[in-house]
Image (cartoon, rainbow, N blue to C red; front, top):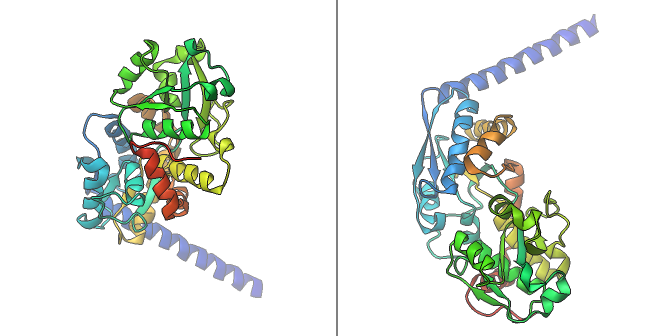
Length: 352
């Protein structure tokens, strides 16, 4: 008899819980139904960053309860600062405005760059559609630098990049530093296509580049050995590239904790991908709803092929908890930040 009463009590509690969960789901559906969710894209229309945002739109509409309209509002400027400042200070924290930011906003804040009026530790992170960002360094085959010893002994290697401070520029300087290149010369001022041409015509000797970009644009460089590939920077660390994972990882050349922290900070900047963020103060129930919608988007079997079709690159999602951890755990001590600034600037590499 006592057992029967306990069973009835448990069943009643279970029924109450189901009603509460059902009521919560209905409340969120009712809130978003008929509403418009605005994605604040911190990039300009038409570029790769825009395509990454557009790849998310139909899936967020599908997986946010109530199937709201999802639109993109472009607030470009300052490398992402303008749109992110708006999201932080001006957007209503009601769950109807989501930042579709560039990963640069994290680095800009940590590096103490001007024009940043937001606090990355107060944003609410929902996840990122891509986090893998492997970089490699390679040289023209004609140079005959087919091992690291030959590479390090070659003086005055001409390493090309787009602009001073560009991701490829910083990556090239990090490779040069950790591989102990002898008096390398860093030459900026090219477009991505011009860099390819300059390499093949012998105007440049080397460059650092995103591994996926190389394989997508110049597969013969890998398949037919038209370039010598020397080292890879895994982003995230430990994630082996399917084609170039055999290359020595740049972290294996670090000599001390200071150098390891430098690479950890740069990896963190690159691994955040294109973070989706909410303004501080967004109600917890809306945050939970949007986190779940983001999680369902990433697990939707139709998402990866759709993303690749638009962006011409594979999605590599990072969910909210992991993204929050990357931001929270990145080194922020003054010494590491000042060292990285030297790699991003036009001056000589710091002594090792």
